[in-house]
Length: 378
Image: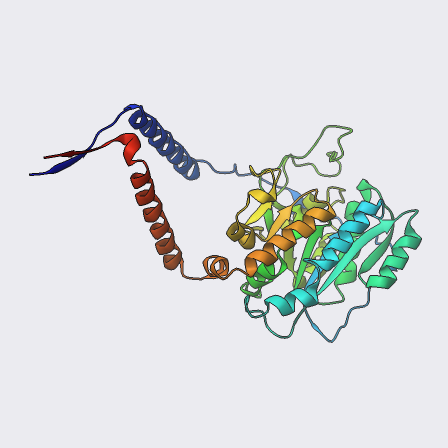
């Protein structure tokens, strides 16, 4: 009776695959054990014990954009920017033409992302004063999206101008506030689609930092003295590159600012305000930050992956913002990519992946038949 057998010309490949499988199993086991036994240590905070009221001093707004109060302002996008250098102006223009072009994006993705017809958003760049005020004033007149606050532009004033932006925003009654920087790309429709699924309750989310230690080294730009904040750790807070919170939190945030000691580390300070008013922080999935993940360039992301990402950060120049935007537009127009990326049926995706794996496996077996040897015995 005929029989078939696969003979090996070189038995080394078996050992190689065994080692790969062993390493893979060990790594999987380690990740699993870490998820079970590792927890962020419980840290006690004394912030809420402070009952002394020290009113936060807000300076004036020099220039502010007009906002149609008759619209349903779903999201107010506050982008921190600098008045210095042409590079920042180019990044603002890139955002205006890409992910920050609210009207165009909402119309383009309204159906595919199930966005309501009456939804609206507003893009605003908040900037401090400098020697370039006239250029900023001209830019504001051209675009109606600049909030110029009466602080001198410097790193230590970041929190000050942010709080003025929050105070200005409180009169607009937006459903959500998105705070980000001008070197970040936001997949706006994807973010809005996720926010629409949120409840009407309090929400504060982004890329969460837990167990973050307070910087006590004098001279460091994040240095905080014990007189400012006596605990050694911050409560969990969202990284400042991008976070979102419910607009109904603005009055309580402004109230808390009168009781929480001021600090110039803006993202940690917002986290303290949220902690003071009892709002828990949430992680937003598919946020990519190049300093915390092993991704050298966004080109390493597949079309499907880049469509699922809410935001990509940081230190982008204008050309990179345009590049990512074009990639997202191109992948959106591909029928198969759209189906695989946006279908709600995980089972369908699994089946498609299994079919691809089977086809590739069969192809490799046939292709390597000569390498591993194929023998026919009578």
